[in-house]
Length: 279
Ligand code: ZN
Image (cartoon, rainbow, N blue to C red; front, side, top):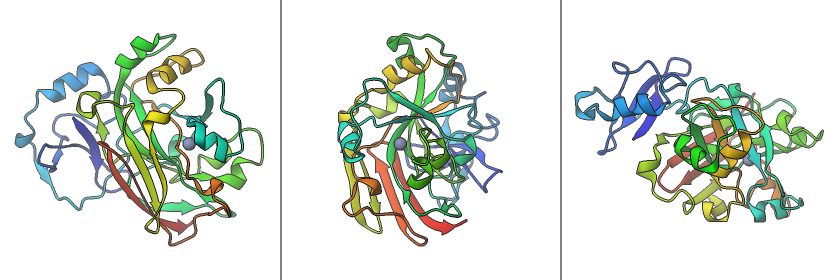
């Protein structure tokens, strides 16, 4: 299944993408794509619904973030060996964990808002996964079963804010720094999550061209690892790091400016398009 949310910001309705690529309104079946819906039991019920019986939604409808009101938005840093190198940092022996504010979540094609005082606005195409069960001290095998879906995430970053202290969160949580979607794809539809191509372009120039093959720590390991330090609940979003090619790693470095256009995607998970606007 490909689950999504559509409609004006703050008033999104739940939906799904049918096999013909038509958005269908799930509003008569579930309240939202949120923690109450993102469990295996609830998805089993959704699988029993015939999409052709659901109202069709115009294709040009705005999409919201594909998950509503997650309790947490956790990020893994430096999870691709080449990206650690371009950042001038060693390959981590333990996953680097930081948080994005949940208020940073935005729709896949919503503008990126350049914060006031921003001088080093950057991009990061990432594979995100969403948790579908309570996870505390779970094994890797249990974690694999608890991942309810995957989505594209742009881990938008402000490097000057990020590097002002040892904690990165300040440069990661601004409004619009977490475009998520277009849809949440359940694992059964995705095939091998460890072999997906991923890319990102700015104004038509390709900067990132990677694959989940080169991840250091894989999603099931990450979820098992995180569950040693915090419990995770249905709806929590975890984004898993970016391959090389961010603005920080260019020589000379490249930063996003107002008017720039960003496009990104991951094989099987869809694409995002954002334009940069001023706060
Ligand atoms: Zn990142």
